[in-house]
Image 1 (cartoon, one colour):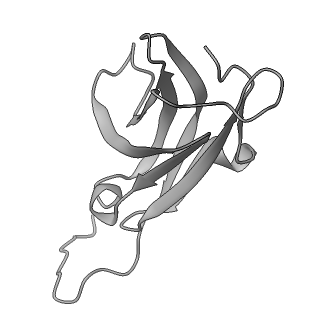
Image 2: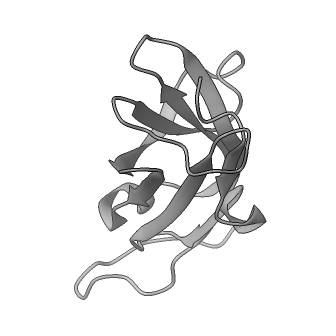
Length: 130
């Protein structure tokens, strides 16, 4: 598989950190083993967020939207409607599938969701002290 050398975007890409209810986006630049720009023509990318690794928790908390921008950039994003449903800590990974069907995980890490404070006008939340 061509993109063996992996990625840049910095270590900050491995930890996805956003505030609940916000839009989030980042990009990953993929390189081959020699350090040259990988050619992602014909590849697909998929990224998911889960509470725990897939073997332990089969429920997907969120699908990260992926877009391949040729020759070697993958744009990752989550809309605010998706992040509004998340809270706490999660794990994630990014997989590439080659044109011949070979699958390779090129990044993985943690997701940290900071609870939001501001809510849309008119939204009333009820709570009680114990």
